[in-house]
Image (cartoon, rainbow, N blue to C red; front, top):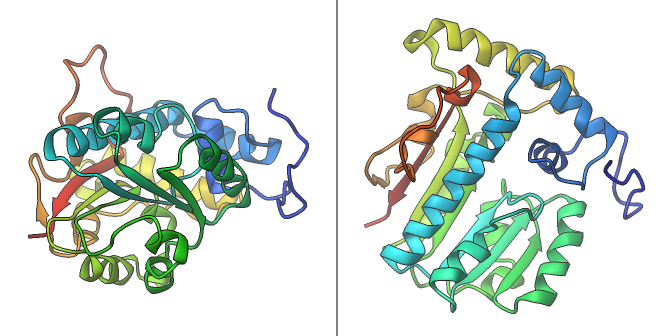
Length: 275
């Protein structure tokens, strides 16, 4: 059973945290009853959300492995990184590029506490407590500029983050600001909750109900967007093959061993390049 004692007075255990909810979905120990309640409510309509969380993590691993091992990228800015869990970005990247530098960013104090632990184990890995919805401030943060060379190509990662940014916050505008600031040769990796709409009315109903239940659970976030809306978040960058696809379709490690659950179809991912 996860520890119910808050590690810091800054942490509100009466309200769910996005990072802790993801941790609960991955079977982690750094979450509280209020976070597990969100998972239970979402599971009432999307019973296999844990599998979705692991599918999202597997996408991250494949993307980072490709970029570090085959493309040779050695700088990663992982936004909304959440709590450290198995196969973190720095572990995958540095397995192929020992000199790779990784900066994790999250605005959750629990993540900040675990990020400090990362600093102790790896001098090429840094954690920054900041808000990804403020690109200008984040990219000017001294811990970011002190650990990444923003004049050289880097990988900007938005893995399971922008579907927690509301339309009112204008995620497309946020991403345009990031893309404009990236040097040529950079990449953007992204995953996002997907509402298939008319492409699949049955799955559209599942997505609509899951979004409603997330709001009722108190997270107030978790927007399922259409394919065109998600594609626009890449800010006009050149998509890398196979484009914006369901997560299991992005260069899988092997053939499928089972049929996917409906909710496992409700997330798209992709990688794009800045010429």
